[in-house]
Length: 151
Image 1 (tube, rainbow, N blue to C red):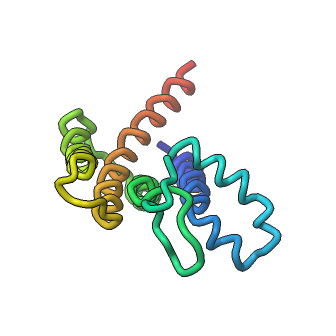
Image 2: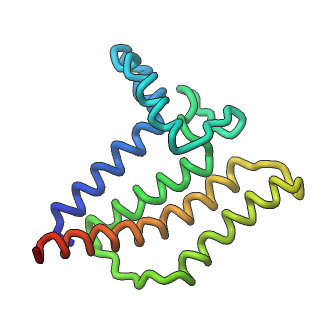
């Protein structure tokens, strides 16, 4: 994928990740607070937004739970790396399963009360999953671009 497409993907993921921290961004810029209902509602379509599972910061809280925050920051992290180094890791179902299992086990263990919900564990398993998810997103977009250019 050309650099310009990698930059567009990075900028899109950066805006999405920035939206997670909208409360903190809007706090110093009071006129931005008018957009809060729109941004909050947008993120309500991708996360349950349980108040007990949000990451609380000194300037406010995230608009998605700790696990979703990890997923989106994992996507952004690998997108940032991909600007400078083109990631050429072969995607496979084994790799996806390997990174999905810790997150799925965490959810299962919390649901069946083996241990209580931990924002740190949820964030970490989400970060791992999001980092790997980027490879599939990148691979899919790359295939789409090649297909469009071949028409």
